[in-house]
Image (cartoon, rainbow, N blue to C red; front, side, top):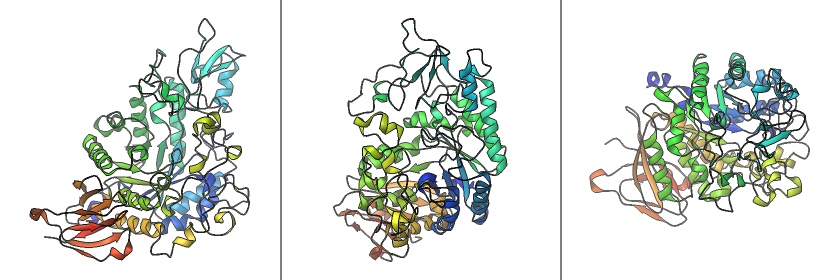
Length: 538
């Protein structure tokens, strides 16, 4: 079995933990998290059983979009520390067998990046074609109807050079022209820089945006648009995103990573399942894992969850490896979407499905979105469209470490307010509590790390109805597991068919009192209850 495990890439068997560095741990007293803070908490991550950390951007940046507006791809923002701090983090993580995944932002730079400063200088600039510049229409309007995700037109007029440049996000984030070979080589060299330094891979930001339609055709109206949706959704971005040529770029990224051995490329791709699958590439030569965001958007309803899992599993290419996400820095936290009780069920689902799970910092203690008054909001997406309530600040609040002031995150007032429940919801409070969310997460992570059936085995749906889902995890020569999750607050029953009676013992339960219970026939669960059963060999 050890031989089999040694042949499986680490990114298939590891639990990934996303760190939003501004909000993880402040060590220098400025109210903003930093790299030394991650180093100080690395033992906690090892205790939790984390196999890899993905760190949101830490590059020099004006912070218009909190690091996703990069001004220098090969240095560290002094807000977070120094390159020496980063090297120390790499060393400390690797000594604990924790991999480090960088956030790579290839679609756009900051308007303060030297490349754009030069590009903007004149239409004759040698870097003019490094960005997407177009003439106005005869009436002076933008070149086409493409919109910005952050609201308004995606085109910004530059009066000195009398052309528009395109920005898919904030106007201070001009999009690079990936049809330019020099741009490609410059960005591939950025990847090589960090791989040479020892990072274990990249999460590639907005991967599906990288290439645009060569003819710059208008996007068509979205016939299903509703007023409750963001303005960006008024059009279908069929020409401004997900162009066929993007897969050639992704394949080259994969080739570079593979040249360094056991590295990983994870793509941020918000697309329907069939489109998402194309990012694995032909013969699995694309991204190792295009992020699967199904659980971020689905109604928390057993039939829809079960169907989505089956649809995703069925669509995967032969060698494609699944992955699952419950929360991230762009979406509401799982505890705010489904409630505290069902967040425990969600944790059990995330950590027992086939595929690599990604935990968003703080979800393991049940952190929730925090109401941020408009005058305190900082997210450009929210500030540009305050009437739509689209701020991402509520899911980015400081990690709650203890009952100390500011939740042990900082000695001073943090950049975003802390949840007022932090004296009761924090790591220190939950670490030794057998009934806490953190204890449940740790047990699940450790079980997944230890058991071949859970970290790389097969997934077999067993039964689902309006209330619960049940499935098996199996691996040759290893223990098998049966998982049953009640996604409602009402009791439910699974009646085992006589021909296939499962026997075993409950080893992890959302209600710890059930652990150790033998299962021989029908299974009864209370509302908001989930169990993991180690099956007895027939």
